[in-house]
Length: 382
Ligand code: ATP
Ligand code: MG
Image 1: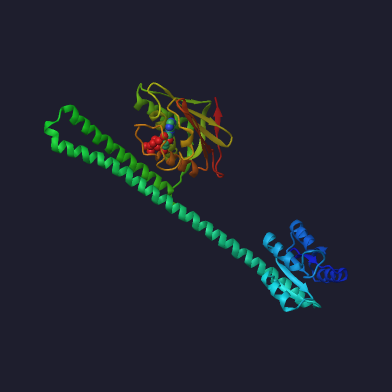
Image 2: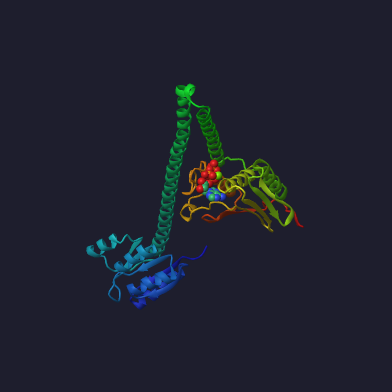
């Protein structure tokens, strides 16, 4: 164990030398001898001793008690007084400075050693208790803010459900009450409204369930070797099939095959959400592209569109649940897709960045580590 480092503050040179000798004999490391309160503060700050042995009457304007107040409050170092002053007034002032010991001169070696050991031990305990209290407070604050956010999300979800249910209820009531007198077109409008609100409810429910499951501590995260090139080819081809001629979905890569250890289901959620957003927020006829790059230690997916873009003020909270940008207009959405994407990225210990220009387009860049520590990687370039 390293010897305890001590700073001696004593203005009588002979006493100071004698004290140093005794302390060194007892196995302590004397860092410095200083004679004034001002020097004591400066040296305590620069040398950071484990303990300060402080005389009360000192050279200079500041006495030992004033210096001790400063040292304990600024540097949180334990101070033990070693003094010939035993009068009541000095004792009262010294008590107020909460010293870790008070030794009267002349002292004996045993009292000196015991007081130092007890002071160091008490100080260490106090520091640990303080740290534990700070950690407990921080944890409590985190828990409170998490539970506050959770209940906010709960109310937002309830609000979204209510909006869609109101549409269904109103249209049903209208059809029931006036259906026989309505034109075919109006009837059809109400039925379409009910259908789209029902689809939207299903989407909302599925997104909430996915997000809820992914936030659970025991969420199953199963990375398996996946050829990301084939995966991206398949997901873009199937999207192109559903979109028919309305959009052009292109997949680009400079790699023939790239094996990465990823959770297949999460990767699907991640890419599907980003690609469907790219489509949803772009005009018909535009190009949506997925770029895949394999590096030594990571795989990058870049999804780019030529759509409406995201206003800068909406970008900061984009990955939080129920956040939608101000320019979505009537484009439907629940505001949960990107929260799910972020969760998928976090579970893979990856990163996600967005680069967007209003009215010009958006690009999301996702970088995921290529492998866990336990597996090897193969990929080859064309
Ligand atoms: P859903 O939960 O059904 O996906 P959503 O698309 O509104 O609904 P997110 O996918 O979380 O929700 O996206 C959040 C918001 O980010 C969107 O509402 C939209 O404002 C903005 N956004 C996301 N991707 C794009 C994009 N490619 N272009 C423009 N805006 C986008
Ligand atoms: Mg979306």
